[in-house]
Length: 151
Length: 151
DNA sequence: TATTGTTATACTCTATAACTATA
DNA sequence: TATAGTTATAGAGTATAACAATA
Image (cartoon, rainbow over all chains, first blue to last red; front, side):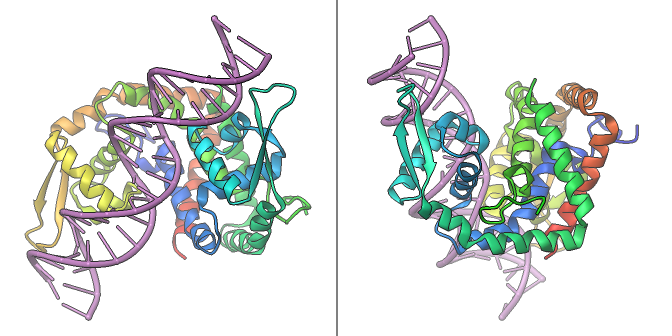
């Protein structure tokens, strides 16, 4: 058994997806945290801004899913981000239960302000790993998310 | 620019490593959380047990790093796990600042009790993604961790 | 002086349930 | 009845600093 040890048939932790994904993320986040320390938003708010910028105005359920957050967490965060001027919210006229969230120019400015840092971090990693491997990794992560997500 | 949009040169969120790694992990954790709900330990304690089982008795700094935890968090968790009987701690006679943590038979039993579930989850994912892709992904994650980690 | 681990503190997110408003 | 979002609450981890013991 190539991927298991003899004790219980468990994989090496480096071959355990939950642990491998966590370790990889922690390693990558080092550089990002330095960048975010220079910005007015934390990691979670950054993710919300990135998602809103990408998918456009959306109801909160969609934002929560894309940003990997629970709705109660998102509610709290959006209240803060609305007060900070980074997002607006308005009731969906077509379904008044829904609240549509939108990034503001000020929110976009936060992303803009760190676009170069962000690109530099990506370039540095590319210089170490190679573009092909990074692309392959991102492809596999997308596929994993899709395959593991629908169960 | 193939990997960037026109607004700020930021990558699509699916091509952002921090976000892609988080989404992939959340998707994978679904099945693991069901398994852990049947066990007496939470996700973090499971990780600590897995690490201790793999690397053997180690000081807390090494455990913290392998389990992606801060030392203050580990201190609290180990106190609980010691009280629950899953680990023991003893001062390192060679360097009395260090405290060596060891998994107990009872801790190993927790791992044993879910080895089959764990294997089944891995098999299901393998059936969807294919063994080769999963192996390639794990290889890339290990390399990413190494390359991004030393900066 | 530097390192290992502990304690304390403030903050943030998770997880769940109960609730409101709308469909 | 079901869904979107809010509120409340308990629990757990993050992050940092100050501290004790040991090297």
